[in-house]
Image (cartoon, rainbow, N blue to C red; front, side, top):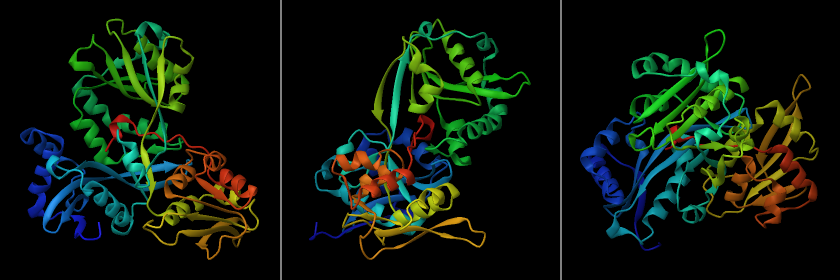
Length: 418
């Protein structure tokens, strides 16, 4: 849009009502119901309320939601969750949403230090043009309670009344973080996220299982569809310390004979861990999950490089390894990076990342969407090469890339949505 003065930026306090009204008009929201949610959001910050201006006219809006993603079990990266991308009906078709997102992803690292951007959308083709790619697989499952295996452990699972749930909230938080600690691809929760879950989530019910010592060892959170328990339950999350707790929760669900159907969304690994993949009466389908885009490749690689495991894998590439972003509009420089190891004073390998002048030796290049899927462990280099999405100077470059970036099961749970 060379002839238009389009500027994306944070709104000011005086522009807040205009931003809110444009959001309501874009999504046909009842402003009286939406305003308390908009203003009382624990994540509310003016600098994260973004808008596109065509000259002086506000034409498109979005909100950045702070998040953090742990990948490869050791590196936690700051993520800009993108939510509420809206253009009012009379301004659509002019490229405003595209330009707002394009300028936002160009500046989000420099302004806030976000290494990744993430979103969920039913229009993936639109966001792919902006470098976003699906980076997770969600298993959507459903079953009648009678199809689930019973367990005597289920007798100890109790539904918490609201006053007890409030008292147990910190123990539930601790259990969630303990269960998630060893998983790769988990979105972390801070106090603001727990405030959203504990105080703003409507219709949330929690049942817990305690181990032999009386400690909280597993919980399941669900909502009753249409407020009617008999119509069905939607599981928003299940967490357990071990397989015993997982059997207790599934057995609890099996006991709900008055419920017609129980359904939920899980990561692939959780679906297997809870044994739902082995139950004939459970129907399921794989769906694309959260879409991600690397905003600063060097920041992501430097985070990974802090782990001894990454340095050990990189050490097998004796001459180093180069990775290159093809996109001409990729916002962060440098876009050619050389990775190699050096020995520290104790003789241990340490990973080093520097700008690369040439694509020589073992090199891999591709667009930022493909490299996001590779680095975050969603798609192996060999698969991306077969699909024509990355180029390798040598066969060894493919092997090195697959060693450096092992598979990860990224999952954005319902309570963590932006």
